[in-house]
Length: 159
Image (cartoon, rainbow, N blue to C red; front, side, top):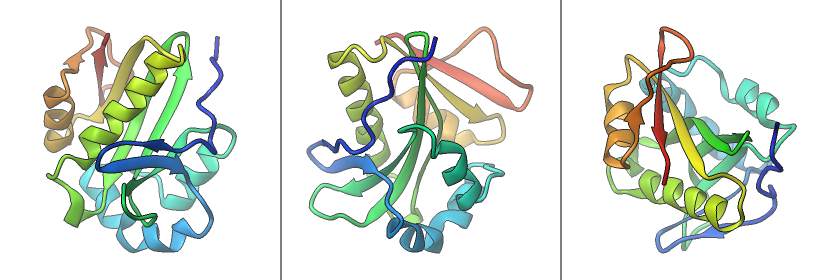
């Protein structure tokens, strides 16, 4: 059963980053860095395809620095049967390694727990994406016994 998604228009503010719905005006800014970022994560979908796939839900969020509105990253999420899944997270190259992605994931998890949206969390990582695997391990996620496809490693956390 699909749970109600987090309201797309609601902004989640953290100490250094915020999560908010993606706006049309964001696409030009994201387009400047998306291709390189997607390639680094072995993401096959182009920005427009990703946007279309997420249009029916609150599943695509912009990551911005707390003191700015310009998107520095994207986070895709979906909720089903008490699980919140993050199939894709990406940050523009200059913002990687500074903890912005980690804080964005923690904000999402905290909101989901607080509002009863999800109690368990999973991430999907392309098996070729060593940095992505390391990212989720640092956040306390562990490989699940089952996997979706041979090219995808499912990581879980039951915070």
